[in-house]
Image (cartoon, rainbow, N blue to C red; front, side):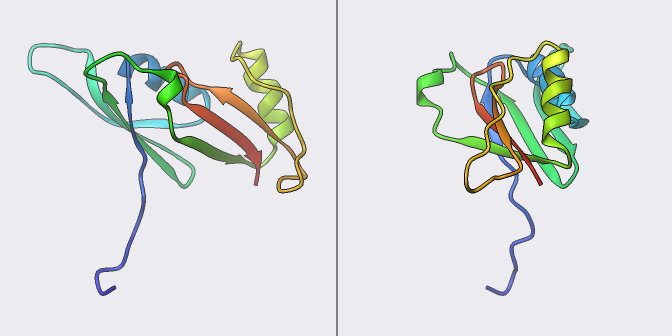
Length: 123
């Protein structure tokens, strides 16, 4: 391939872009850009970055069906145990810390406001 792939950025549709921005900021993402329709302040699109990851959020045109979410996100942290404790202390609904064969230093599950599944793991 002559052009060369440079990056892959997930783009997910969410019920409330501002609410999702606030959630992902708790995970360490930093808001880079937003877009709102003329005459409004409510964002309908956002670009966030955190570490080496990027994420785009877009306003859904209809209800989000959690049962139809066919994607999950893996987020890697330097200290997954400390991250688990911090997010639990912040009131986020973190799942139990698990230690599967493919991630012996640990991982845990977290759902975002639209029920997208996030697996937070030790890097």
